[in-house]
Image 1: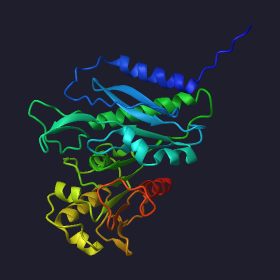
Image 2 (image 1 turned 90 degrees about the vertical axis):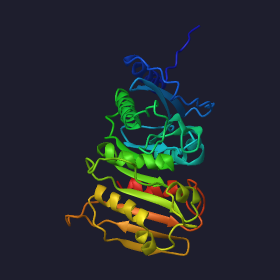
Image 3 (image 1 turned 180 degrees about the vertical axis):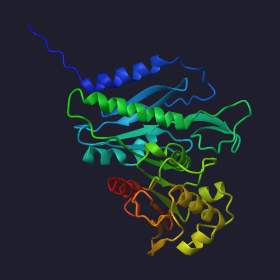
Image 4 (image 1 turned 135 degrees about the horizontal axis):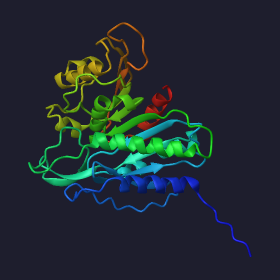
Length: 330
């Protein structure tokens, strides 16, 4: 009687890469940081990956669609969750996996660490976006480094596939995020701009960072909702709702500050095109300071009337559809 051993080379490489990352450096004690993400993975295309980032064990989910070929598709999307959430919730709620199944690209759903927040006196998962308020003895983890480590993992995994197929296309990293995850994406647009092709986020503001000019522009879209009371409260804006028109949005001091920050980041001037309907309005900035056309120098704000503090995936507003179409233009 003969037996055949079937080897799933992709799964084997996932395991080898994860193990080698954990063995490379000893882990630091990190009980004050650790979130206990307890979820059961039943989808065979979703993998839970553990890596060592600056001596701390970190985790992320990677979605690998059936038929994925690194030689055909270089696109990789990172989806960052909001406060008190995790990567599994983003996997379940954002529909990025469905897009990946159709177009055959990788999706990464990272998990943040947990902190006792002095803002609301509670332990919750949070990205270190530069705005954390923690106890004096607690040092926030370097999540930009964690992002860089995940990008390195992605590149190693995609390179490993070259042993069994054609040479992988160059990796194109796209980032998306919601709320605290979107705040963190803004920080990444400054501190890891050289690794990011484009960004699309929901409900964000600029991070607390001293960096004045990123390595390169990162084209981006921000989605807001006029009924996002949570963001209004977070920004301490004493108003019942968001500005109702493009001009009033620009005239609101805090949002004008946000626009100025993104224009400086992407080397754009303040000239904008506006579009408005009954359900939404847009502000589009694509005029560079130096007068030379460049599709990387692009910034867009979309404001949807009646939208609350959610990552919208519905018939009226589908953030994943909007961002995916935008990403595909790069």
